Image: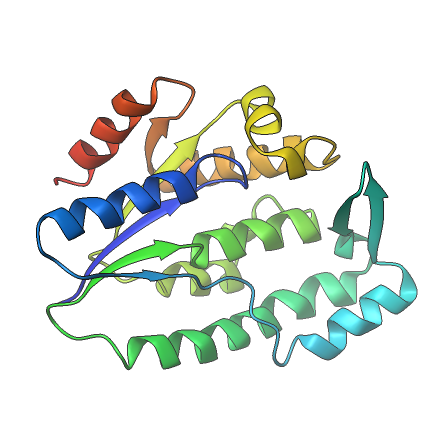
Length: 210
């Protein structure tokens, strides 16, 4: 059975940095690890996205040359109900193409996956209990049972300081809150990425039993 390692958390929490460290770790061991990015694919949901842009449920603004966007689907019961289901269908299509390439000896490092798409949907719909609903549970079922998951926790100030394109993001506090809800309700392993780089790296490797 393939070994799957998954780092999750809000944009700017440090996922990319430590995913690269995981890749380097496996490379040093002479092992080939695939770095896979699966998040919010747009296939059947694409027409609805266009509709939301047309009616103002999706809005963008530029601050200091950086474009920020937000989905406000909670203003429409129809969109709030339909969009998560369309995203689920799109995600399954994307995941099926990826799963077909896995071999029993595969090592996979997930960069954005079902939890991140679910977190996006919770924010977009304003449903912080979406993971407890039927469609939310369907997303959770997409995560293989043997997946080792780490949620990186980082303060809002550190995220804004470390990642320039989050500096003026008006939704960042809510994005962080969504992951806090998921970590608490799902009992996820958490690593505090407000600490020294080497300390965080060693804690991640330890929690992943590496």
